[in-house]
Image (cartoon, rainbow, N blue to C red):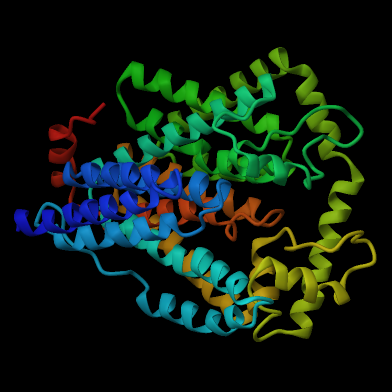
Length: 467
């Protein structure tokens, strides 16, 4: 079985070397392909599965979204599924796709809207990223996280990812320089109109997302993961690092001046306080929130004032409502199949239904749920919501079956999903590939099977990640 499980990753590495040997002659991307493949192979051979799926999320953000490669993360996800199947064992069992028939219905009902996009690449890119990609990443999350020690490791790694994006955001704010930037970013930057706070000269920072609203959504989604580790861990050093990560992410969210991100964070905080598992933990959360808020007011009074000014602006809400009204009109006109998947399709076909208060045509209605309804029809929206609700329900069931210490981990994951879901009312969170990828990974992880308490104890005792 060990020999069989190694054939697939080693063969993939050899194929990557051959492909790269050809590509190097024509493009510098050849070396990137082979190095990336070798990293994935080494990580999977060492059975660092949680790190492997974190790499999928990072590739989706930087390579697919920021650099425009589009499909690299999906290829890696499929590769990982093959490796996990061949390497299945009693310690790493294979898990079938949960809610299989609902996923199948989602793909089937979304197929015609994908074909009906303005262009075939536009429709199928959206289909692969948002529909098929969601299924793959959700499946990966359920396969990898089958023990509490795996859930702890998963949340730790994604907490680190959130902290790194926060640091990257703060460096960009302080220096005006985007680390690991590219000419593609500069070209996209030139057409964006929301990178400066209206009526001020304050910059809104987008990091690799470019758009600050997307950056804020991503950071808020990961904000509750280090807090979950904080309450689950008994190590003072770990607790201190978790508080630092949380503080960095909050400061970075402030740099985006995203109103929707703050609304999502408040919703997630409420869920986390309720589900964290102990009353004294809830009191600690409120105390930590008060201390961090006080520090931000003292250290960053100008940014706080600008954020309040931005949130109270009447134009901010009216423009969103106008975009939503346009989407509702589109859904009323095309309730079953929508106008077709893809931002180009919506940009062109929704314009005749534009609300009078919407000043410009939009590529999406700034609401993930209305976006799905307008682009793909109400059946696709209903199936998507059913998958989301069932996965959250399963996560809540896992929470009820866990001991009090472990409940903090599930509380953090559920709070992250709720923050993303609430934020997706004002921005396309669940329908933007690099954000949705992490959201479905978290949902897969927290809705995975729960092991017996004794096995949880043994895992925690034997794991080098035990803190």
